[in-house]
Length: 144
Image (tube, one colour):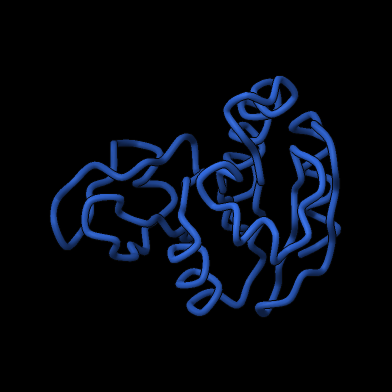
């Protein structure tokens, strides 16, 4: 069974989800019942959610750092979602650099979109710019 994680924006709890069930129907928070922000198998998270997931998952975590005003970020979003559905062995997250500026600064984000790969709580790879779902999938496979 492959799993993913999602942060509840209502109560800030971390939810571990079965990937297949999360795609089939809109997942709800196990604590408060609110609908979780999940597109494909991509979960939008805050800095707090990111840190919780990093502490609870030792496998591959792929994070897209983006902003709403960024044109390339907007075109990359759907490709990132497609890649999440093809790569259930990785957890896919999105972090908005406008609302999570401190984390973006801590991680040295200088341009967006920026995709960072983490494993065992350490950065293992970084790719700047938009990619196709196939390009991202190749990077995921080489990082597993």
